[in-house]
Amino acid sequence: MRYVVRADGDVSESFASGHGVLAGDSASPILWIIFMCDLIFPDDPDDVSLNNVPVSHLEQADDIVLFSLKLRILEAWCAINFLCINVKKSSGMLFGPIPRSRPVLTLLGSPLAWTESYTYVGVTLQSTHRNIFARHYEAKARKGRSVAHVTLGLKSMVGRLPPREGTHLYMARVDPHLIHACDIIPDVDLSLLAQLEAVQVTFLRRLLGLSACSMRAFLSTETGLEPLQYRRIRLLLRFLKYALASTDHLIYHAVQSSLALARAHCPCWISDVVWVASSMATSLQSQLNTSPLALLPNGRPAASPVLRLREYLQVPIPEHRLALTRLVLADHCLAEVRLRWAERYRASVPRDSRLCRFCEECVETPVHALFECVADEQLCVLRREFLADMLFHMPSLREDTVGMSNIEALRHLLQLRKTLPLLARFTHAVLKVFAIRAPALFLNGTLAV
Image (cartoon, rainbow, N blue to C red):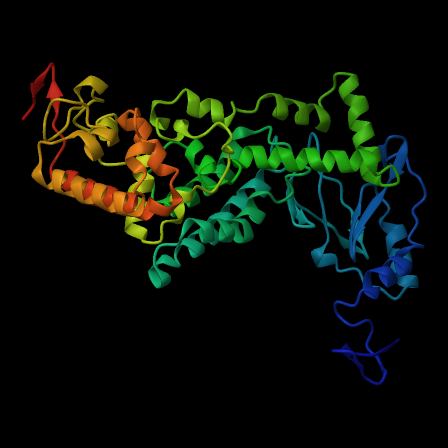
C-alpha cells in the first residue's frame, strides 16, 4: 500500500505503509469488509429469523455477535486467518427465562463467562430487567448529567451563559447522550425516560435562571428546543422511514418481521412504537392555552412559531435579562406567583387574596407592578424614567398603544426588539423594589401579621 500527501495543490512523493492501513484511511473499512467476507456460518435452527432471512451473526469491525452456538466455526475461521479471539473480553448472555443451572460454553478451551449486562456498539443491554435497555437509559442519563454540570460550571469562569450560546452547547454536548440509540429504543417505560428528561429540564432551567416550580412547557417554547420525548420519537420515526426504504438491508427485514407480529396482535417493536406515538402528551400550545401562568406568552402574534429562541432572551446584560425572563415566564417574586406556592407553614393563597404589598388593593401582577401601582414613590419615578426613555427611542409609542389595555401594551413592548434592553432594565429595577419588602398576606380580607 502506497500513499501520497496533498496540501494546497502540492503533492508529495509516494511512500509505502509497512504497518497496515493508516488510521482514518477511507480504505480501512472496505479492506476489513473484504477480509471478513468469507466468514460464513451455515444455517442453523437456532439462528434468528428476520422476515425468513436467517441471521446468525453481526459484526461491527472486529466486534462480533453470535446469535447461535457456532463457536467452533468462529475458532476455525480465526485460526485460518491468523486472528486471535480475546476470551477475557468475550461473554455470553441469556434472554428470556434464565435456568438455575446455566450451560457451560467453551471458547478456545476456556469456559465462557456469562453476564447479565453488556455494551455493544455503545448500547447497553440487560437480560435480567423487564426492559433490556434499562441500564442504557441510566448510563446515558448519568453521562448527560455530568456533561451538563461541566457545561453550566462555566459560569464560575465566564459568567452566566447567554441562552443562545447555552442552547448551542446543549445540542453539541448534552443532547447526543440523551438521544443516543433513540431511533431503535421506543420509550415505553416512562420512568426510564424521566431520567433523561430530568437532565434536559434541569439544564434549561439553570440556563434561563428559573426555579424548579416553573412551567416545563416554557423551557421549549422560549428556547426553540423540542421536549426530549418529542425529539426522541421524531428521530425514531425518521429512522423507521429510512428502514422501510432500505429493502437491501437487514433492518428492513427486522421491521417487516415486527410488522407481521403486530398484525398478529403480538407484543413487538412496532406495537411499542405505536403505543409511544399514541400516548404523547398534549401539544405545547395547548398547555400554554390552558395555563394561567402563560398570560404574557399567549399574547404573541398568531404567526409566531411555538418553538423559537425569543428576542428577550438576547438582552445583553445578564441581570436585566434574568429579571425579564422571570417576569414573562411567571417565575418572579410578585405575590401573584409567590403566594400561589404552598410553603411549610402556609397553604397556597387564593388569587384574589394575593394583593399588592404596597397599595394592598389590587392583585400583585406584573402589569400592576410595572404600570399601575402608585403607592410607592420609587416605583413612580422608575415608571416616569422608563416612559421618557421609550418615547425618546420610539416617538410613535403613544400612538401605537392607543386603545390597548395595560396587559396588551406589555405584550406589545415584548415584541419591540429595539427597546427590549430598556424594558429589561426597568423590570429589573421594579422587581428589586418589590423584593425588599415581603408580600402582603391577606386571610379572609384581613392583613395577616
